[in-house]
Length: 122
Image (spheres, rainbow, N blue to C red):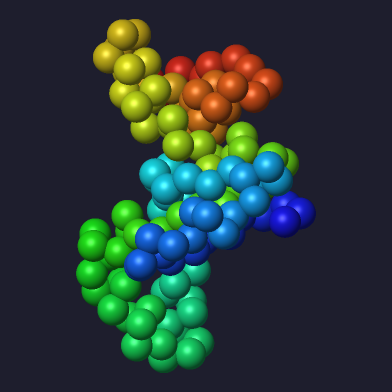
């Protein structure tokens, strides 16, 4: 896999042994931006194909979301779509400092890539 993210629905819990974890990270879709991206991809698929399965996934989103895996190549690990730590880190910063930190900067800080200055939104 060279760039980009892949989303896999694993209803029967058989995907994990099939993935080469030396070249790609596999994780559940927990980053809010990743969840939005996945949902919009499924919505576009349903719109273009009329997929009954896609429609069912959207209708029962809370049931199906935990069954998806996100495959992340090293080049994409620090993107907002793949940053699983974003949500908990953001709430900690808000509680400790009493300020809201810019979403993109917060995600990059939480994922450990190059640290940028925090932007306070008042």
